[in-house]
Image 1 (cartoon, rainbow, N blue to C red):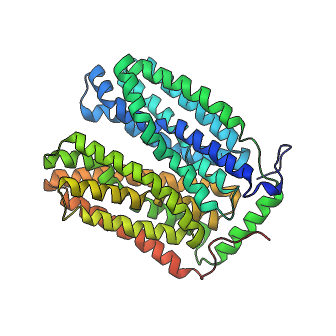
Image 2: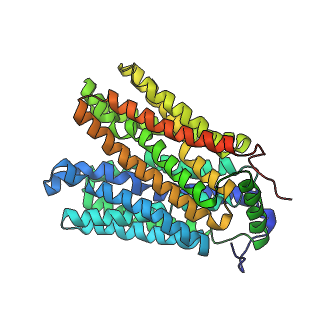
Length: 412
């Protein structure tokens, strides 16, 4: 980063200000994270209003995910060059205009396009915020990044019942307009508190630390980025199997969609604890080892879905799955900060997160296609386990090919 007139002193690293900044980041992520979850809640009302089938009604979700994936790269690049405040402000206004456009849309295609803008805005409240907060911590970087990432799951816990309440009371159009006005009003004052940037000397120290870490790896920067993206696709193809199809799976077993929704909520709830815990672990063993641990445990949880399909068993396994997988995605951001200079963090984190979203989209579709072909989710779970092994293999290879040195290099 370049020094600015409002640059903070070097003492801000790991300081009380850094922790206050983390609290602000968590609040922004929780507010802006509505863009990931409102579309799922509003889907039945939108489908009924336009009189379309379920596939057409799901188009806004698809556009939101595309917007989120592409937006993460764009807003991450903006954050790298101009600071997180500009990137987050762009995200806030994109969310606001997107929600207003949804509420005023006359056709479903307009709703879908507006959700692309919502996804773009929401992306600024995830990857770029994780990358930004990583600059302000050295000793506790892992836990800081994990807490920032937990805002997305916290939004998934808080926003759905709120959105559902207002849709039932005021309709989906008025609800979306209200969300648009609220997110802009709530986010802009918080974003104004993030304008401080690090002095150039601190960036130089972090860049040197990343260069020393990169020297441990036999891979070029491009190869390492590609490996992380392939691993991101693989782990999230596996992750998507229960997250996307758990409700339908419970319906097929005769337990009902409501039970499946409860299991999904339980999974996300435990994912919050997982993300925070993974940060503590990463601070001690490094990002690669933390990601490898989470991937192995995710594979174990996926395997448990095969022999156990009782109601109580599924509740327990779903909680375990959330507890095991919640720290995987933040680990990618930690690895990027370990191996790449801070000036590239936002862009490179955005690229990896785009790969994880591609994995979620691919895995959700692939599991459904396997179910249609076989008439059972057993083969779909096996497919997820296979993709998970790809991720485990990449992380193991990266770990074994690197020289064994401390995961976090302290500044001189």
